[in-house]
Image 1 (cartoon, rainbow, N blue to C red):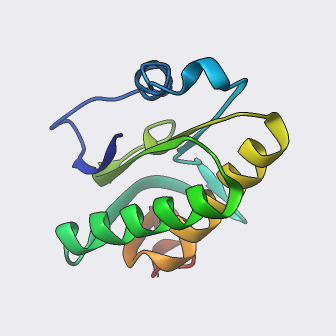
Image 2: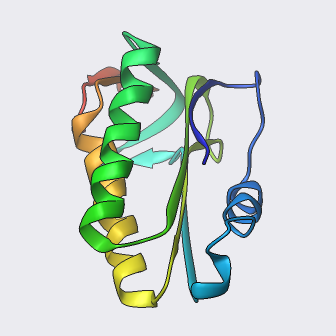
Length: 145
């Protein structure tokens, strides 16, 4: 299982890394679905051009534990085998990866439902602070933005 909040450039992960790790599961022979998602920096937000995004978290260890708790809850609710999550913090530009998640499950429907819920819960429950620097000035978005 990979659950990490990573400073940009300290460690590098991609979706394939998360999926390859899932395929090493002892239960992979019983599975038939992996869904993955990569969230990255958008260069346009409403009517502004975003030049940079700064993403921080007040307490990295607490946030990682909260992600682990979300993952365990989602695994139980949907009966999926495993979930890997990497969330980056730091300074980002258009196209930079921010959030990676992959879910391994027995069937596609519960695996798809699990990834949807995990994405939304991490976005809205973890206390990230996102600062967008744009042609219209700076905009700060707290958890849930």
